[in-house]
Image 1: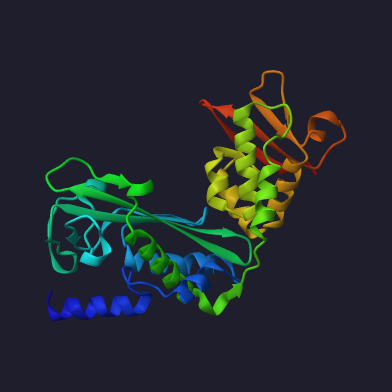
Image 2: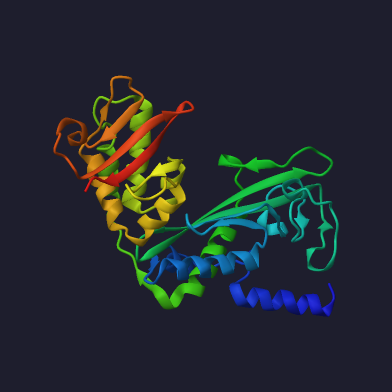
Length: 314
């Protein structure tokens, strides 16, 4: 590496933190227990800046508050990996981008063994003000001369994955520290009790129950990404607005009180129509002709249950 590249790499590490460097337990705890009391756009923009500098190849969705990096090769030190070998490098996985394998400048790769290791991240801004940052790392390995990379999950998940996940989490926190506030968490027993009561919403199909449970959990935690996964694309969220799931999620993030209403009406229970392909909540929506409050609907779409609408009747 020439002097110019070395200086650039040092500047990058100092600006956002080293992706492979271990964060202290204190820093990790602070990042995990902090929320950010400022506008959603500021939180998302700062998180995107950090992720882009460390892992520049990504796909981002500002409306949903999500950032998904592509697979990036990583440097593995001998004391980080129990299996033999590894790869040193910072270039994008050719299998992910379709780009040819080539080396130049800071993206030069040096083989140390028979395996290439890759990492990618899912980052999401969730909740309401104060906003929270969710960081989930994924690892894969590619045998030199072999086929496609293999995801490392469960017992095969490498020890170094959590450290890099925490390093990214802390780097984002450091960027947003001026807006940080301490979050309050319920005792674990309370969480278990709340989940245990969500196993039934009335006489509805099992698949619908699972979908309603997932939406209820996401609404309580203000998890925009999880909500979006359980919604159809042409989602109805307003009597006057064009159906659009991304717009709905962005609107709810700006007014998180609406998500409290979503959780509340799901708590009240649901009812299935005669075809058992449409489930609506709360029961009052179909049982009381004068009902004009919030209501939600779930429909069997392509073999799976999704939320199709949530809106206020007034």
